[in-house]
Length: 125
Image (cartoon, rainbow, N blue to C red; front, side, top):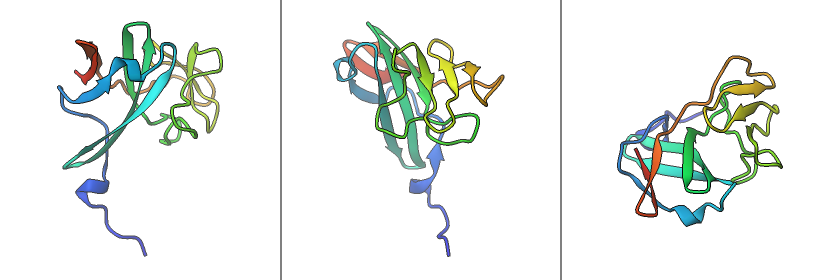
């Protein structure tokens, strides 16, 4: 028997602007980091990729099967760091725009999560 979903257990696809996620330095250059934001309505799961002082964020959900992309914490990028990879079915996505460029997700894209750097801190936009 499964219990009904409560607001705290719902998986959200957006966050409000202005949520402080922490220092940019928490993400080494050329890597990605997972973030979970707990809100009254439920939990948001996303990740941020850092390239120098530029960041891009996405909802942590593969458009192919709806699963989180990484099977290991923060393991979102291909070994060379050039693409985002779904570790379940080998789908590949461009970092800049989340478009699928390989695997079973043809024509799909990752859902953007607007983030920015503000005075050395990562903040939702």
